[in-house]
Length: 490
Image (cartoon, rainbow, N blue to C red; front, side, top):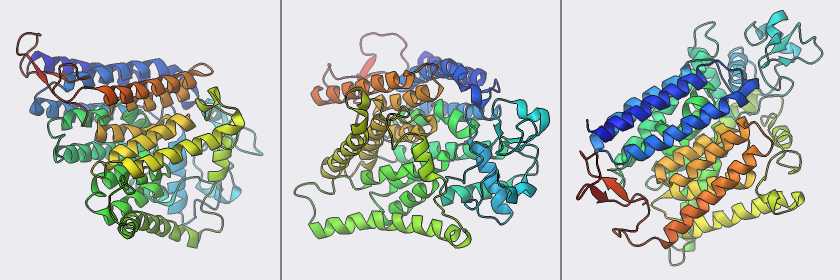
């Protein structure tokens, strides 16, 4: 192992150690702000490790990515959920379904489900003193409470997410509590890393860089924190979205079905669908009839899978299978920009009342650009641009949503978009008002700089190309003949 590989390994050890200190402290979700600076430090080490691994021989890089990815992922298993209580709802929804009840029919606080309560999800007495406890309506909070957030509302999760909760519950031993969901998140995260590594290794133009691109996801601090420790079901949605994007340009119907499955887990992956239609409206392309056929080949199966996923729950549920979806959107301020920190960047230059319409207009323009000028051979690029822009205009405050962006960066290699998940983490865990807005603004500047650099960069091979240096294998010092030029941005 040369000294560059050794340095990369040291950075990986530092990353794992930092994550152990941050996640392993057993912080409670209500006190998430205290984790921000350790989390930011982990991101700084992660970026340094990414830079270091890019110059390694393929075999060494592959070994470090695999071993490091497993170690980084495993840190999420060290403690109960640290910054979110969502997995407690997952466990409850799985338990409710196992009892033969639709999760869309009753809120956790309703009396009809009292026989399903246990002392873990519904503590009593002194167990209600924790900061991540939620009082039950019409009850003394010191007598009865729950770990489930929003206990008075119905579930918000789509049907394949609910099916996943039921599966994990069915496979879990009694009294396993949060651990099976964390293990499920770890397995899904590792599966996504494996799919990325295989897809990138088989793709022309990225074979040599496959380990470094995969490291964007496998080593990212957001993965062990959000997908493993907090066990967010986004892990399944991201895996399905990656499979869809790497399949759709060759097998459009299968890709469309995978897009539908990803959407039926978490609605957010639907924003990647236009990526699969990149270049559909390009001038001089296929005939209008052919364009319609190509679009239906993706959108049709996607819509069909979503409909089929919802159908069993529609048949057994008395209430709406959309659950608390619209209430959640209202609660998070998407219908009233002035109520929360949504549309934060747009509100810096526009009146609050214009923000929602401006956001939709910007997304419409980006969608048209992807359909008109996108690269049909690289659907992940259009998906990344559209998803990243969506985060910049809506500025959501939940960091687990942005793990999708991390996977898209791994597919495309546009490193500057990694600022989006870090900014969403700042919005969620930041300690001051406007912290997230500042972070999103810095990311917008970084993305703009990346776009400008690519627009004006010299042709490949020029000594002035941006970030194209790669150290020759086996060298540790800069000297004549020890640097190779390599285009890092396909």
